[in-house]
Image (cartoon, rainbow, N blue to C red; front, side):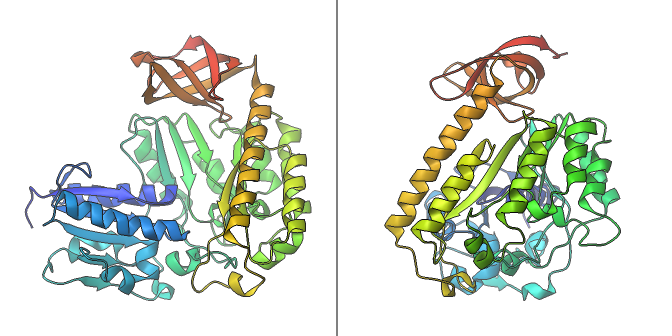
Length: 435
């Protein structure tokens, strides 16, 4: 192995994938490789894939083609969810050299030797039991900390249990130790990520509430943010702790809904109904009305009628939420959803998606209106565009201010003053804690 080989990484999909790519990149760097950008003619490309939607599969194929144009002789390694689900299909993509399933992606350095043929290293996902702690790096402001992997739920639209295996995690003490590594860097905010993070502990002596309490005591991290948590696992004790007693957890929850129709929720095999979901939102807002709440919704699930979709729209209109992430249903192999109802035409799915995107814009605008004139704390990021610097408040309001390099990665007290034409919030800086 040549210690001067250059390696580039590309990540598709979720925050969990980003945390794992960073861990794999550190393995390469510790092995003497130089990490470079995708366009910098690397000797090895590592593409960490997603397979939540059909577009993610297509994107993988496009990236392989692009990689071979940049460096025709380079080795191309595919790992991640797509690699676990369809390894043989990937091996037939021209230019692919190595395909690693879920069990072997963290052993990638051991599989680099055989370059004379396409190598597929793949095991049944039932044999995947290890949990590898991971966190992202490279962004001075924020890090994604993997606290859990896999899922035991088997929702009828989802391939993740087939791609990542059963729910599992490290201990609380091991997870805290990983967070303390991040605390030694310049990172100010940590986002907790996983497939189903509320299932931390899987009913054992440790649980997600215990993890949250332990992480809140980690010195050197200004903020912890929960990336996404199932409504049936977002217990009132977690809500109350994060909003009333925690020093570092911010007032921001992202809570998947998927449908506002109880009929569709049952077909999806979700573990809650709209009544429980409404209760969770009410509990949050009763404690802190400024809390930002994001919602995942799927449109076009098989059998979703106009009445089902209207129920979703009306349910969301009444909820005191802040924004939506809208997903257009995509047929996936080896899932139960296609058998559960009539296929919704793609043009209908797209129209329903447009309607919910417009509703999301209105919800976000309304939430921002409630924040005008309030004092908040913003963490400014490195992003700069046409003379503006950007950041997020603790309750996830995106803020802009005239660019000042001294503010990058700084926590500042601000007053929210005006919603700009681009939908972002302008502010006055009241206190700058930059040293």
